[in-house]
Every structure is written in C-alpha cells, then in structure tokens.
Amino acid sequence: MSNTEAPAGTPGGPVPVPALDDLPERMRVHALARRLARTSREVLAALASLGIEVRSAQSSVDKKVAEQVAATFIRTACRERPHA
Image 1 (cartoon, helix red, strand yellow):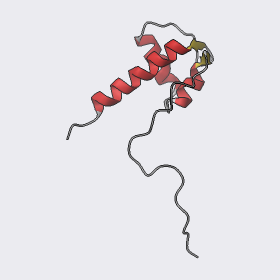
Image 2 (cartoon, one colour):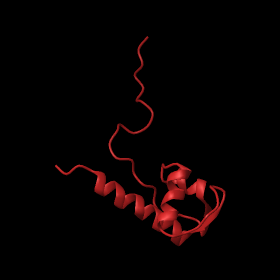
Image 3 (cartoon, one colour):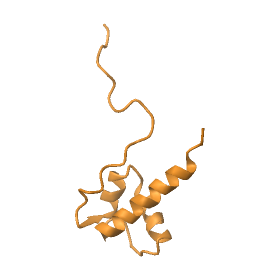
C-alpha cells in the first residue's frame, strides 16, 4: 500500500501570522493565543509586559490591545531569527 497524499499542514518554515484586520472588537485572551499560535500563558505574559492587567485566559481584551500583543510577538520573532 502506498500513500500518495500530501502531508497535512505546511512543510516547515515560519508560521504565518493570521491577518489582524479581521480581529473582532473584543476577544478573549485564549482566543487571541490560539490565533497567534501561542499559549495563553505567553499571551498573559505579553500583556503584563505591556502593563495591561488581565486576570485569566477568559478575560477579554479590545482590538487595539490584541494588535499590540501580536506586534510584540512579531518583534520577538524577528530578534530571535538568526541572520544569514
């Protein structure tokens, strides 16, 4: 038996960040984490570093804050990427 189907998912490389244009006006921290392919703890830590207090992953944040968190992760990824 041979399997000629393509594997599921993308073939490695950087994970694309979903478009931030379609973010709702308010969303829960855990939903933002899922969109950014991060854990809720990572998003909570990013919020804390931005000085934004939230109590848990079930807390809601507005669109502007969600965009700030996404920008934080993008900047971090750019700094961690090895330069050729």
